[in-house]
Length: 389
Image 1 (tube, helix red, strand yellow):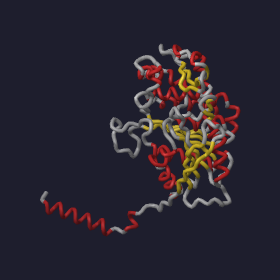
Image 2 (tube, rainbow, N blue to C red; image 1 turned 90 degrees about the horizontal axis):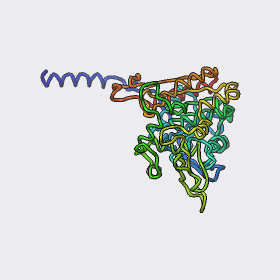
Image 3 (cartoon, rainbow, N blue to C red; image 1 turned 60 degrees about the vertical axis):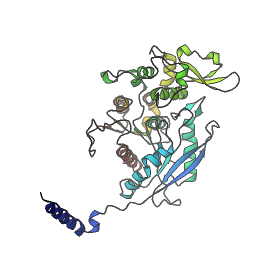
Image 4 (cartoon, one colour; image 1 turned 45 degrees about the vertical axis):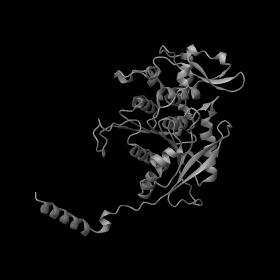
């Protein structure tokens, strides 16, 4: 084709484009909400005052006769409220859904759940902070006292990612009188899945993977060098600080059983952790039972008499190539919800997710992929609950 032919095509399509009216290319008007950063003090002095981000919907009216529903959005391990507002920009998702009428205006509260270990697991640790109480008592009461909310479970929901997904489902299960709807994006839901060959596919269990990060055995030097280079070990240490902490003399810690002192409290007393496994890879039953008390699936089974009458609803999703194998937590948790007769929705995302242009081997559905779509789904799920649908 000659150059003048290319130019003719370009001019022709340019003329067609310019001749179209502006309104043909306009979308819906998107109104913008606002983000406020506030400090919410904790009853537990070891937690202190923590930053939270609060999304207020477009045209928020503090004097509106009907209060706004509230979604509490919990961040993942190592994160903080800025993950939602600066990296994900949750305000853009909410603005669009509200402005287009997909969901009703709501308040979104993003509290801090990060401690010295990178994550509190939103759990009351007798040693490292009462983080469940902080969310349930301090954060919720502060929001209800300072914003135009509906202080009732019918207009209160929890959503979270990863550690936050765990926290959302766990806290809703422990407090169904406070929250009517919970959503987990790539959350830890079934602790026993950490011990199993995942679905018979030959993938090593979590304990084997943690030991492999540490050349086959945990030692004190490994616990002084946590972070991205030992991500699974770091997770395990933080979980142990939440689920199986220990306090005593440094001589009370049996390091051959993976009991490790971490923080010196006074001249003779240390705070530390008990990992639920030996360096042989065998679990330590007494410690594992402490962990099981914080296992979401076990909590729902044990608390069914409180959860079922309240009609708690649960949304779950995960990528089919989750980096930590959390997709294998979905089926057993879903089966449990079905056995209890609770309403739930489940989504498993894959590299072939509709609307994604990349092939699965180039853009797999990992731990945090497709988060915009997944958050949209959970917000719509909560909105249906708020509307009594």
